Image (cartoon, rainbow, N blue to C red):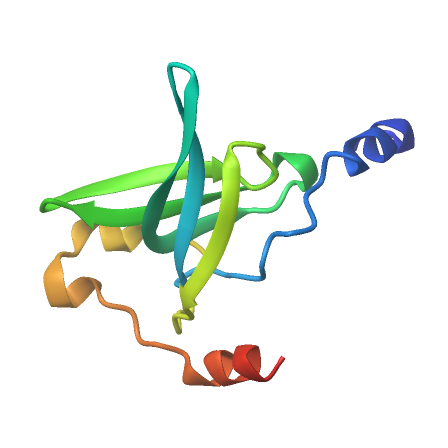
Length: 124
């Protein structure tokens, strides 16, 4: 519902280096972390459980298990703190929001790999 002027203004802030990924994919998000005067990249690798496509306000949620505890982080897709996004593997899922993974643990929380997507990605 935003006007044309706002859309034109937001276009210059949209990132074009974001790879194609969807829910169920395992991604590694490299986040810029500032510690005092130093800046470094920190990896956050996990499964994408939700994607919200809203132009410049787009976001995606990544879930991983760290030391036996589930950790979720919401990333703004076009944020400057994201250094890089790598797609490690494509998952085969039939839902758009994978919130049910929060209640599952271990082998039950596994997602089948979509080998057809992986072959197409390698050919391109």
